Length: 92
Image (tube, rainbow, N blue to C red; front, top):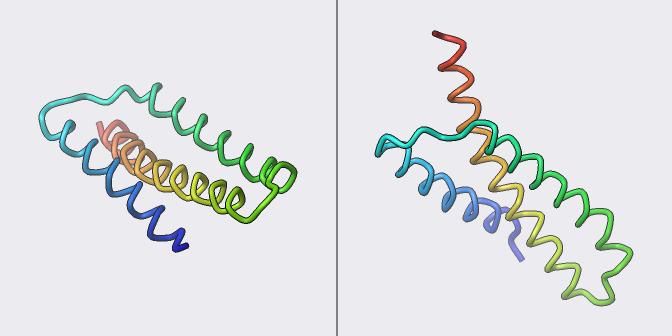
């Protein structure tokens, strides 16, 4: 499987969703985004540590790797939003 494509698809989907709402005047909850990033990173850590222990076949390993790629794409999108708002706050 092409995990980079899966990661990019997750990134594009979340980024377009967030951009659409921010464009309509939505103000993101920074604390909630930071919490979501922490939860996604924790999920990646759990998958990375748990997959070798509990995966009994190649399909389960691929499922774990797909989950990791999706979470990485979401983290990238959320991190760009956070970076943008941290920069805006720093400039003011």
